[in-house]
Image (tube, rainbow, N blue to C red; front, side, top):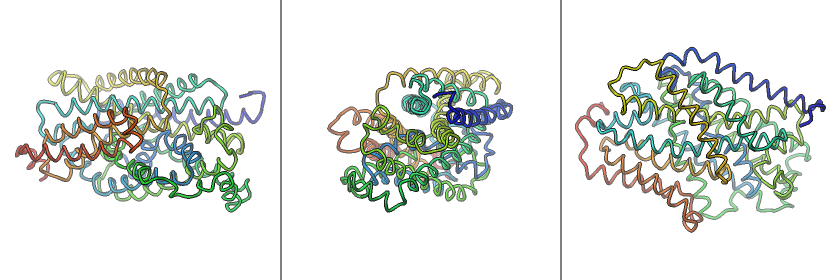
Length: 489
């Protein structure tokens, strides 16, 4: 970036304006979030239906959408559409059916976290479910957060000419500041702002690019000349199709999405959030794939992109074809996608350490004020950011696949036990524990064996194995009367 160039200055100013807005929200939310853990981690269960809808969408998509999916569409074409069909459908159904039950049961039993819910639902005085779920959260979410920071580093490097390492550090620093200050309230409100930026950027870039190429027909013809299969949404194997649609299996088990359902002020409003959230979820996915396709019309091979990396397509394409002010908005949107997921996961991890381990296991009888617990949570967030930075520096995987690994681990471990706990009164503690362990281990083992990994995305077999073992172990053990009567009255 050349600050003697007026265009670069415009880009930088619009981008800095966005950062100031995000940090301001964090500062203004700090007072409310400092009251206690309920406020810091759930916004006091006072979030309205609009915020919950957009926050759930924004926090669920991450850098995977703007960097990973666009790069994937550039590589394989229109068949990348199937990569978002699964999660859009799954999250719509979760909003309609699972979310109201989760919201009602967690409020009734004063549950702030997902581990809270599992322990309370199954009257687990041994804390087995709480400890297992915390371990799963820390393992997979650290990888997830690291992927977001790496995605931010790529965006900064491509857009501003800084090193990727510098970009990673800047991304982490911004997320750290407003998450530390504002907690869940700041995270949810910034998610709404970030969702708006993401939507604007996803719409502007492909539309202006298509106009520049001479219209839709000319754009399609140009893409066909590169490779005719790029415009065919069914140009993929059955295994790949199942794998893409199976991405949706991750949605029921990702805590950073689930806590959005728990935070709404009235569970009856979740139906509205379902329709609103699903519409924007689908639109964002469609336009992300369009960006990848349009990019292929401009750049016939990945060698023409910075570092030969398809994941650099979105910022590079925007830089080539947008006014500097709009380009600044695009960079803000990419960072928004990253931050809206990273901040949510940091809160989930911090709540797992402070609420689920420190307050409930290590010092259950010790009198600690709510403000002290919030302070400890902020310290944990600071530590987690540094761990994620180190992990991101070491990890060599692409953002897309690192996110899919973490998404799969959380989805397989938590998804089946959660759904069965909500809808099947026969679910037991041992069944849930079996689901946790089998889902987590299957994802890890499957991912490390190339032969298996090439056959199918690890989330699908892991989800099915977790589901099966949760049912089998639940049938072997008779549930305690407390589990059935209190939780399903």
